[in-house]
Image 1 (cartoon, rainbow, N blue to C red):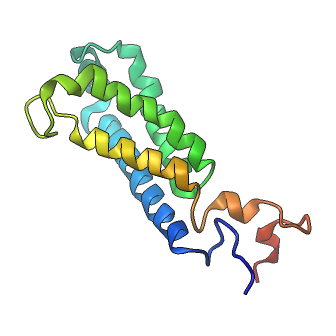
Image 2: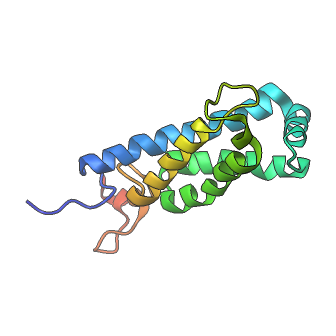
Length: 153
């Protein structure tokens, strides 16, 4: 039986695990960004960032990174790089915002357990890569030079 390609729609259990991790992490990032935009609104989110000691201008790149990064994770595009790029945001939130509030995220001011878990998921995705059913795999050229999308019946 021939070896299966990483990212192939019918690949190993590890590739399906990577798919589940990237879908969950991507959905989390998008949900957090949409919460900031649609529930808190820009003025509320700016105040939130300012109240934590972060410069208010960082609100826009942080929310943009959550939206774009979450979408790229869900689609399976450059997953290792996206997970790496978003990791400093999680670690920064632990170090500068939530770390002093204890372990449990539901404590007053929010603890850092949830962010630490998301950081571990990010490192796991950096190790696993795109996983199954990624668009990056689909549009990558096959050994014959043809896009894999062109070969799907």
